[in-house]
Image (cartoon, rainbow, N blue to C red; front, side):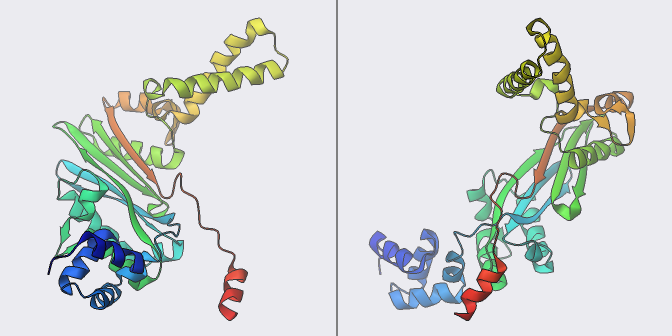
Length: 290
């Protein structure tokens, strides 16, 4: 029978499942609403949908490399406990390797990718239902390198931070060192030129206000501001940071000494910019008793 938009809408409202999942359920059940609901329950999709509003700000990131291609992936969970689960890590690997071998450009196309007969979205939905808390693919970035360039990768805190570099100069050790630097020191920018003008102006205005509040003479304020901006660069710009393996060098000097050039950096910190889950355990226990 024909599956109408109103049928899909009705099933979606009754189960909370996604539109495409509802349409598939109705097709599989030949339009029978009750059977469609059972289908979604059996697949764990309706159960997963109930968790859709939960905060998944924990998880892991990882880097997958093959030839001239690499991808950085972040998979989120609600708790750090689940992120340490072997099933969660296996799921991340399946997702990462599948995306690496694809031409996916965004989350929608990535979730539709096939992995041994199931889409990545299906894998995530099923894992959510089985594990019992929301799991979501937050983001990924595909990176390519050219001839004469190498990848450097580093995972910090077991995958809480993933850092991938592309370095020109055919020196994998240097590329990995710079990736390690970025993971450990968490720069906001790669070069001075990459600092957005609005960020720089904001920092200058803050510093200038500090200088004035310190009672410094206005005629000296601009000079003091420039001096402190230098410090700002040293703390937030990767190439201007002191190199962690030799504090007598900046990262830029380390690269130059090895005849290398930083081409690209991708750095993921799990959950950055997201609200963290903050459950009150005592309240949760009491709610279960009532």
